[in-house]
Every structure is written in C-alpha cells, then in structure tokens.
Amino acid sequence: MLEGFGRFCELLYRTILGAVRPPYDLKALRDQVVRVGVDSVPVVFLTTLFTGAVMALQTFNGFARFHAEAYVGSVVAISMLRELSPVLSGLMVTGRAGSAMAAELGTMRVTEQIDALVSLATDPVQYLFVPRVLAGIIVLPMLVVLGNAMGIGGGYLVAVKILGANPVIYMDNTFQYLRMNDLWSGLIKAAFFGGLLSLIGCQRGFDTEGGAEGVGRSTTTAVVIVSLAILVSDFFLTKVLF
Image 1 (cartoon, rainbow, N blue to C red):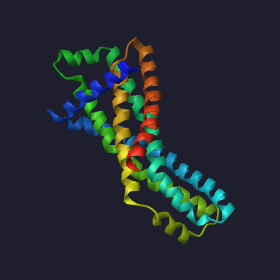
Image 2 (image 1 turned 60 degrees about the horizontal axis):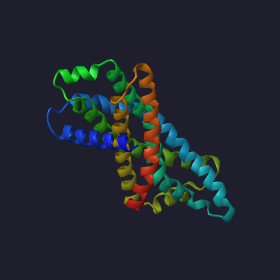
Image 3 (image 1 turned 90 degrees about the vertical axis):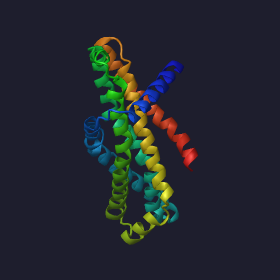
Image 4 (image 1 turned 30 degrees about the vertical axis):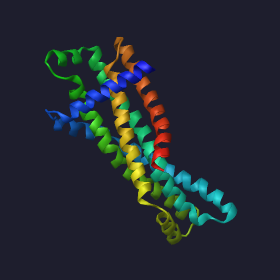
C-alpha cells in the first residue's frame, strides 16, 4: 500500500511538471474533455435525477409524521449540492471514464506503445497523463452543476406532481436556506474527485503487467481504488470545508 501511495505521489509530481511546461497539447485535452465530460452526461443526468427523486420521496414520507413537508425542498437541495451530486457523479465517471483510462493505458503498456514513446524522446506522463487529469479536473465540476439541477428537478417532480406538495412553497424553501458555500464546496469536491479518478486510473494502467490478464486486473483495481478514495477523501474534505 505504501509503495502504491509513493508511486501515486511520484506520478502526481511528474504530472504537475508536465502541465506547466511546453509543449501544450490542446487537441488531446479537447478530446479528453469530450470523452470524460460530454460522454458522461447521460449517466450523470439519470443518476442525479433519480437520486433527487428518491430523496424527495423518502424525506416527504418521513417529514409528514411531524408535519414538516414544506422543508423537503431544502433537504433535497442542500443534500444534492453538498454531498450527493459530487460523490455520485465522481463514482459514475469513475466507472465510465476512469476504467477506460486504465484499460487504454494498460493496453498501451502491454503492447509496448509506451516504450515506443520513450524511444522517441517523448515524456509518456506529459503526453498521456496531463490531458486526462486536466480534463477530469475541468469537466467534473461542470457535470456536478448539471447534476445539481437534475437532482433538484427530480425532487420537485416527485414532491409536487406525485405527492401533492405546494409548488410555490416547495420552490421557496428549496433556495431559502442555500448558501454560496454549499455550491462552492460541492464544486471543490468535484474538481478534487476529477483529478483523483483520472490520475489513479492512468497510474493503474501505466503500471500494468502481465498481458491481457494484467489489463483486466488493472482496470478492476482502478475502479475499486478510486471509489474507495472518493468516499474516504469526501469525509476529510467535508470536515475541512464545513
């Protein structure tokens, strides 16, 4: 475990150096933004939409026991902005894009394409890691903003259209107790998760050994490690931000 953490720190340092020195491959960054961000929009939309809907359904039934249904919108909005949207978006993007990064770089490793980059005097970390890590940091906050809107919308549909809550009161209470810190903390978490999932996914693929079997093992390990890292780091980020 310590060896893996040391390797992570080494590649993080090399990625930061590669990000600040030329050449800057904007085309590769654009392609990764599309792969990580645009292609992940449907799964993030569905995840956050139904998460907000389930939150409203469960909260409404619970709050009805002491006649506090008017505050369902507040609970859904604060929960989505602070916690649910960043974490769930991070986990979904990990399963869709983080695993793809590990598989792609793992295949390049076992087919000796990374060795070919080194023989051509190209820094493989700058060439392969930097566009993916920057794309993760850039696009995940954007996905979280969209997820926040979808989660609040899903809660509204369930509470108002299905459970019969007053739409005016629901919308007023949805935004009445929100603070800018609720939004910014979620975006900071999202950027951190985006960099984390991209870097760990690339690391596991970059260090792949053992042919095709090793590629599958690296892909699985990347998803497991990133998912655990997101959940653990979320606790400490919440402790710091709030």
